[in-house]
Length: 589
Image (cartoon, rainbow, N blue to C red; front, side):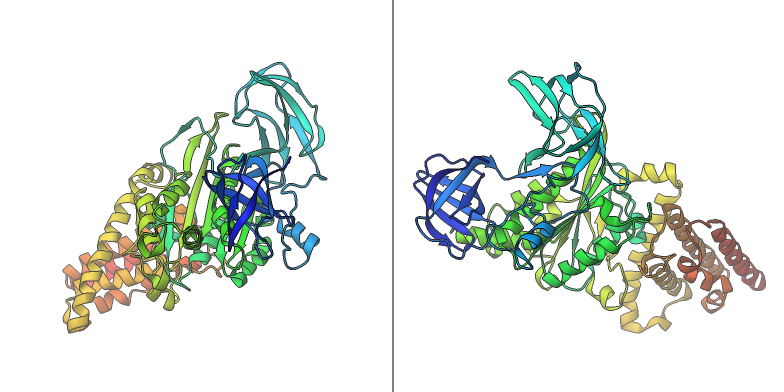
């Protein structure tokens, strides 16, 4: 990058620097501060002054230090080699930084985001002489065993393909094609750059009517999330936000996972960095890192880098979406990102809003979540970005600003419950506080692919859970023995549903992932037990007798005993349950 002096340091306030003598600077321009070349970004211009947020520790920066401008916005390098890499908030590869500076990142140290020495096997998809539009696929690179990296024409380029390199090995910065545009010739390489705060363009947005299958029953059956959708996971400390995201990252049917550790504790981020490479992708049997990008930005890193990390992650996701892949973004957690906004806003002496957060907090949250979507890409393929954002409200208070504003811009809400977590009920997603507005959108998919009874069974089960809440209030006053068997049976079935269906063990080989077919069969059996038992009670059969039916214990244990590949076993359990209740009804007839 060609750097030039654009001004000098006037005042330093943590990561925020006031500059003076600004001559030729642009808003959101990438700059270097001082002789250590600390990376920063212009966030405010006023006459001959400017405000710069620096992404590194500013200790040692003094007034009258030079500020160097690049003329470019903060941008990412996009190309083969992203998958399996661990970056910080501004796309510096942490593995290379450790080799350069040891265990602690030194100020001013930087490394190329993409390896310039590694050669990739490029296979052209077009011939010279054809017209290419923005987003057109000109060739492919096999990035990992599962992911074929499609080399696309950048969104701001279109014209005639003058030349294209033959199949062979090329480094990311080598020219592989030349396009004749209206403004002259543009050389294309395997790599392109894109500003992190600018959404990548698409041809059109599509309806969100295909669910993201996670294998977690409480999510897929009760509160489904659509591909291209947005969801918030709020919960206090220790309720399982990170573990829920880990389970989704491993088991969901997204092609690519982008995990953003935004302001998390160092030990928690260390667990992620050490455990993710050990996880095995259940679909390929190889490392999960072959389809994962990790962005590590711990709580002791500069707050401005934390603020940028969210945009870094979603830009990487959009890049793979444009290749026709379905990408899931795990943001953990957006509360730390909002706190970084608050600190930067305070240092710039802006007028605070609720709880000290800046007045533009809702706008920033909306801008982030609106970059999700199921789209038709510029090349005509279908791709999606699904954003799963964890929220860490202080004290588990869902009425605080970040949670409330996030609820305005997401269509799915998985509220984590402290009491469920304390009872070791995981995932600790509350069936009373959570909701999904994608329900009507994904119902046709369930009807067509799984079974038409899904919507009815789910609706009946949710009504039962609401009845249970009212009955438990009565039980607290008068005790369970005061209720008739018909009402006690409601509590009985709901308890079975919570233990046999909603609670899921990540350590059990059978229970840790449930196919949608298994989920529907389990739900149908529990609802069949409810209907048959209710009818038997009306005929005079006591609840005690119904509980003693042997098949009831089989229903409770079916999540552990029936593999995904053996749906016929559910027919046997259902038949045994109905036979047992038939025998009771015959006695009382």
